[in-house]
Image (cartoon, rainbow, N blue to C red; front, top):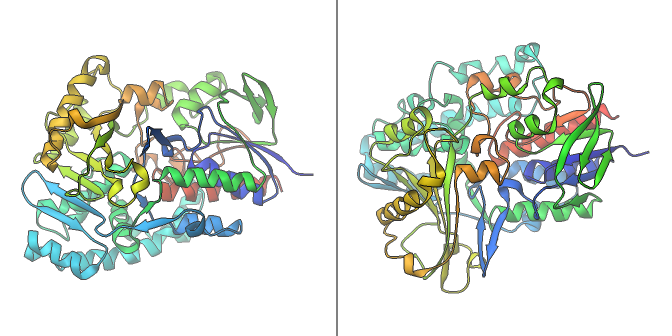
Length: 492
């Protein structure tokens, strides 16, 4: 007799888990509040324009390929993808630019154009991080149920590579003297919603992965990954119910036994939570039942930054742009201080622009562009009232775009949508609008992060950026493997 599992949320972690659980013999139902799958990795579509709501960089597809292979599919056939070269263009407010490429010799030459003395530092960086990833990857593939799990020989063997006393920025300063190059190899901390001056040095593996394994564009955007995973999951027998909000997780004692929706109760042998952890745990589970993760304790945790988003359907092409474009403001450290400590809006913020039609014409009507504009900002804080600031920051964002040569576009905009941190919180159920979940400092990693087999209740499991290993699509998929394996083992 098959066991029944309810998965709350059809984000990438929930969909990957549904595939694995169905292949493992479970009867799986995925409940999704929104009218489409994907969560933060879903699409915005209108008038022939298509935008990724959230992630646009797809790194290290190997993990998802292994998940697809485990259910008898091939990721690259199910989800057509293009490896980008150049991967992105960085324009520095301090002067100069860098066209990042996965070609080692060309990348050395690019670095030499900015700082000849740093050119060979790139090869040293790659060699060291290749070993670092080899050592640490197995540690990301296992759960950490308690303090004793930190004493595993596998984890102890990588301690020399962790360097908890070093920030990511100070780690990169050992390879590159030019401050611009230090930023070029540390801005990836923003994938975790953190400052490179605070982010642990462990995460130098992020920029390494970009150059070792490439940055990929799935045809149709990263949201196409979610849509195709949902298709495969359904083909494996998974039921996906959209427009179905979970209102409460049901318990018998301290055991999860199902969920309640507006349509009624759904009983299950296990519940997997893929919704934003902090938001869901404080809304779906009564505070009186929680100990380690009470409302008060959740509120004291460190959360990532948020993002101010513009999705612009524009008549005309921007062939001078790369697929991915990053502007790093001259006073980057102050910009990050505004976001993480002062919780105010910078007047010269760094920003990112995706121009996917350069690679994928399906993202906009012929002769048009679908520009995705992201400005990192503070998560929800009393210092910023988005009812007052949205229009002003929209105007500022358009002025910033001129630094990438994007000018005079207002009259050519045929579609626009704005998402602020207030929108992330109120419309997309993200705690404080912190789009990258709990921060990834050492006090909130491994066993100190909400655990895959959730420590508060039996038969309740977590998947996604709020649990181990953390945020970002590759590690979210890894969390699906970890949590699904634990659940299947527990249900025998």
